[in-house]
Length: 452
Image 1 (cartoon, rainbow, N blue to C red):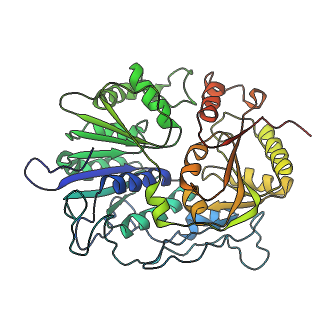
Image 2 (cartoon, helix red, strand yellow):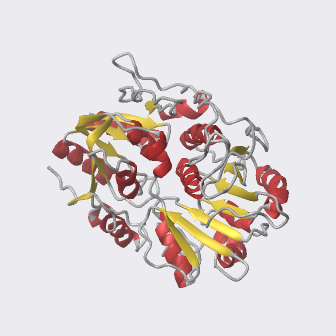
Image 3 (cartoon, rainbow, N blue to C red):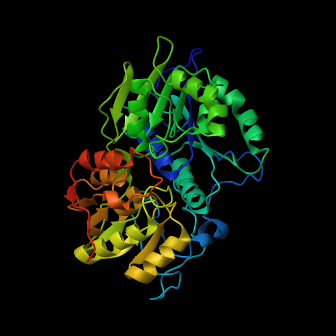
């Protein structure tokens, strides 16, 4: 689906709604592939909502709650690439070696304007589209989690450096925030020709979909949830996250059911509406009329790296404990055994992992705990990164091989043993996680680690 002119001859107006750093990364990948360009000579952030603040440096309040090191990757400067990012060593928040920090991370330096991919100095773009031929405004529906907010601020800076407008909404900043956010966005939603969303399961996004008249709807990757979304849409099922499926709907689910049903209908292609799914995930059940476009992380590879590769192994954390799928003690035991078996020295924490769990991991495994301040695909692409990356079933087993293509880095995935699951885990959890592992391309599959 390429950018098209609006009904009145204006540039195609695109609104993208994101709630996580990975969603914003994939909006940038989608825009890069489809040739969306700088909408004008200036693209200031447009903060809005209660307690508004322009996205910028990762604040102390957002960064300091982790109590562990943050990994900062500066964006590539023009015309040359900067050196590899440095990741300071830390365990439980106490720096050693003199280079770690657990406080504020500097903001992304201002960058010179970039020409769109394929553009010449005169502004012509491959395919005949002119720069500014498709407007893109990224709307950040900011969550309350400090680490997620910090990563989103860093990604918002990268989006602005690419020439896109960024509107930061404190969408969850109090009881009246949703009303301010929805009211402030209503006009833009009605005028938009295209809506891009990172999380079709989000109640916020589903509510906003009831307002828009856009003919083009695009879903970009929100990790492994994209696989479940496409399958549910193909089967005509209600939209429910995989780790909650199988449980009884709660009171809020029942209250919101009409909105969710409306969103599902709007995400179903028709004569009046086109739907695109932009994904690096394996999509097997494709609904009739849905266009599936592959995300190969071309923007990431063009803007970052190649990385410096170390001889050790790195381990990628998961939030399966926090979502109630995997038992915390079993997970810690698995991490300890996996690190010992493969010589891992660093643990890249998922942004949703609790500080308490990470402190315990550091104390009981000896691993260096790193809180990336950008999505791992960018951190890994910049480096330094281990020659082997170990992961449990998650999005990165699909995305890292793409982002690191041609570098020689090996990605290995460890299965989740059924005995690790909690009593409250969804009945579909084991099958879904096995599917995530089994469908991953260009990865080495490891058996579930057993106690030493």
